[in-house]
Length: 120
Image 1 (cartoon, rainbow, N blue to C red):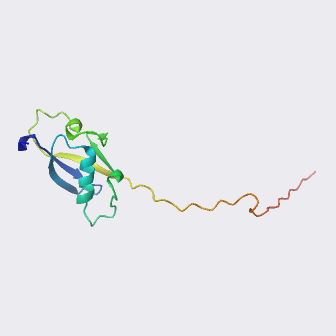
Image 2: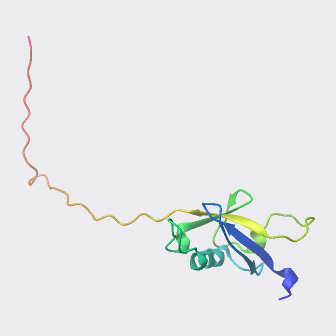
Image 3: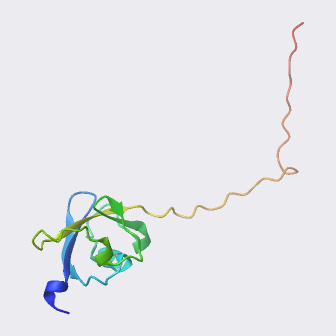
């Protein structure tokens, strides 16, 4: 593929630092971009995604879908000279699986006694 067909992307992280820039084919999918971001993620960050599903990519104010290609996600800037496109990375860690608590059955539940007062 000719180099002029490649799209140059960098990814802006939550703290303002960048990952990249990298060159991608216009046929590369968003899920491929996410996998690359996870593999290139800086080790010194407090928040680290465990998988590509923990990441959302935003370009031109839109959250990008995994099945879309880079060509489908590019904003129409045909009249501008070729430059690096910055995409924003949002990390939403998947919730950790909490241990299921034991449900106390009605028979095992401690009996509570209630009293009431009536003033006449």
